[in-house]
Image 1: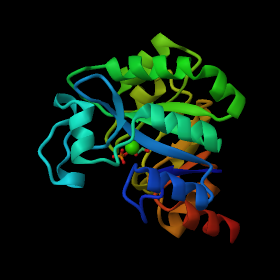
Image 2: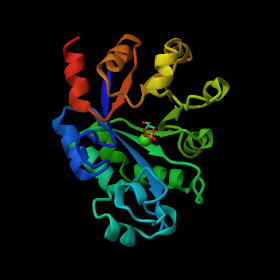
Image 3: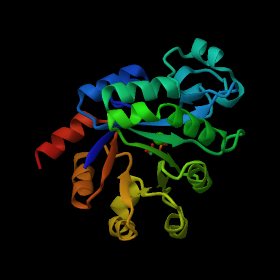
Length: 234
Ligand code: G3P
Ligand code: CA
């Protein structure tokens, strides 16, 4: 089971900053997870929320603000280009989650596909896996329509109807740990469709062990060092 640092080592460091990802490397993560949004000037940045309230106490909306202004408010913001470069350099696999709905619809998927094409030879040489994930069924299908070689994960909310996962073109399915804890048989159901299983956001020892027992392929956690320790002691 691979360990992905959710927003970096975000239990200990500010989420999706260089510091969080550098420390995810130190904590022994196999890869990194991030959330992506487009700025007003069309730059893909690592940011979870639609606005800057929670992390920077500022009302700026990512989709309505240019990168330069966003960086002035929160200088630690990383761009997708910076993140790709770091992952390739550190040889860490990447889970890129696109957030929806957004006013620019699926432009973010177009930007990602274009950036991955630009870095194709470096990505291949570094032997890392890059997967685009989304809770949006249409975002996953958009990636597939643009480049069917790109690996995708369809993320599940607790209320996502099963048929949408069944008919997704994604090679992996991503339930949350709460859903899997309530319904462990879901792991077998997903595996029976030939898909891999990526589970978020798994921070407690009992849940990490449950994921190991259920044959989870990729564990997404805020605590990569702790997850490694728990797995080493099973
Ligand atoms: O890895 C998937 C997980 O990150 C989805 O939830 O809200 O943390 O982006 P969220
Ligand atoms: Ca995420």
